[in-house]
Image (cartoon, rainbow, N blue to C red; front, top):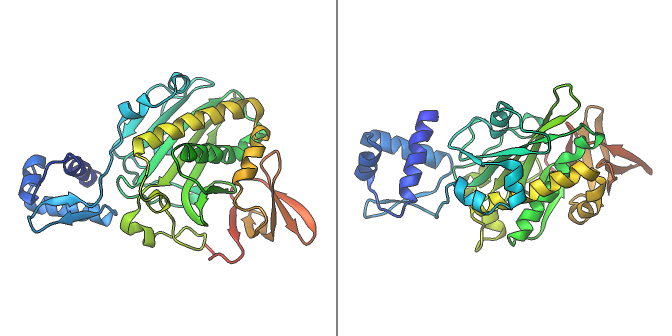
Length: 337
C-alpha cells in the first residue's frame, strides 16, 4: 500500500501540474511500466479519486486538486500562532496523524505542533472507528498541545475544538454548520467532520493532548459508501458550498489559527468561557436522543450542556448529566451503529 500510494501521490502531482499525459507519458515520468501505470490509476480510482480518460488518450483529474503546501499554510497563520506552533509538517502518507504526533518529542507547555496528512492508512475516529478519506478529498489535521495542568474540563475539550472549527469555516463563508455533542460537525443532519481528542499525562500534572480533525471536502464516489451511524451518508463541502469550496491550504491555516486561539482561551477559563458560543451551535438541543455509554442506554430530550460541557438530558421528568467520553449519541430514529 505504501509503495503504491507513493506512486499514486507522484501521479497526482503530475496530473495537477497542468501538463497533459497519456499512459506512456505517465510511465516515462514515473519510470514505471505501463502495467504499473494502470495499477496505480486503478488504486487511485478505488480510493475515490475521480479521473477522466478522454478520446485523446490523455488522463485528467475530473476536478482540480490542491496538494498540501506547508509554506502556503504558514503564510496564512497569525504571528502568535506561528510562535506557538512553529513549522507545520506535511506528511505524504501516515497510518494516523494523531499516532504520528504522539510519537514525536513533546512541545513546551503553552505551545503546540501541527501536522497534516495527504493520506491516512489507519485514520481513527472515536470508539475505534476507522476514518475514511479519499486522496485530496479531505483535510486530515492533527494538533498537539501541552497544557500546564490537567483540569476536569479536559473531558469536554472536543466541544471547544468543535467551536474553533466552525469559527474557521464561517470565516471562509461556510454557514449552517452545527455541533453534535461531543465531537461531530453536522450540516443538515449529515456529518461533515469529526474530532478525536487523545490525552497523555507523564505524572507531572501537565496535560498533553492530540486533537485530530477529519473534514470532508469532496468525497466523490465514496460519499455513498460511507456510513456515519447517524442515519445517513456524510456530507462534504462540495455539497455545502459547491461554487466556493475553500482551498485545503487556506482551510488548514484558518483551522490552526482558530484552534490555537480556542486552546489559549480554554487554558485560561475552561469550557465555561465558551458556553455561550456553544449554545449558538448546539445541534441537539430540544431533540430526542439515545445515549449509549458504559452505564447502558438512556433515552431522553436534550436540554443543552452545562458550564462543564456535560450533556443535560431530560428523562421521565428528571434531568441527568452525561459527560463526554466513550459515548454514542443518536436521534431516536437514527439507524443503530
